[in-house]
Length: 248
Image 1 (tube, rainbow, N blue to C red):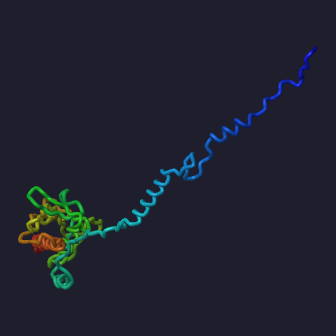
Image 2: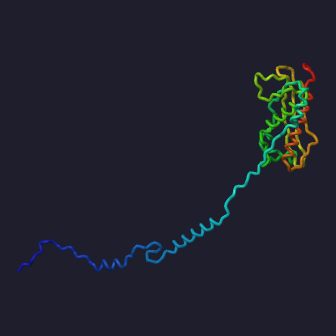
Image 3: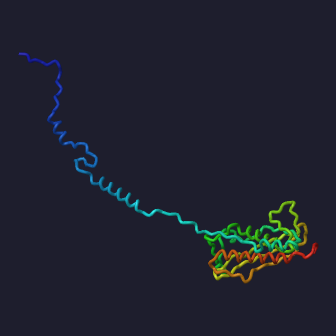
């Protein structure tokens, strides 16, 4: 007896629904926010949120930074003669004097005021500064003080123009312009008077050293005023050295 053969080919095995159901029970479902894969809340996330909240509260309670006002003060040298004194001396003025650029040592070419504490030690005060370059300040005040002298008609500051006619020119080289911690005021300068276009050396020259000037060691406006007095003394020495008459 012949057996029947199924010519449709082998049948696909039917899915094992029991195995699928068992696997689905064993596989963890997607975790909800704040929970671990097993459905339990994630403690790390809560700690991070709490730490962030505490940090924000601490930042709100910190004192706010406030900018401090600038305590720097600026000072100027000032002429010793003003107004009425200058006009009174005008009747006796005679010479036209040019003031050249003032020379300064390197340590004085800075805005900070200089205070000498020892012979070889000097301090520069960042909170007490000159309001202009010191060489320009000395030249400006020297010109103003010379203008008030009876034998000076007019003062021409450098740089000179070709049409600036001058009887004499004054060159000054400052070697000291500072206070000391002990209250002394130091100002020293070498000066030289020449006649433009005349060869053969200087008309007059000399050195000026201020004497008897003191400050309290704390008031830097007072120090600037005393140094201004020193420049006035220099101008008097220079004016006194000018010839008494033309050609002499």
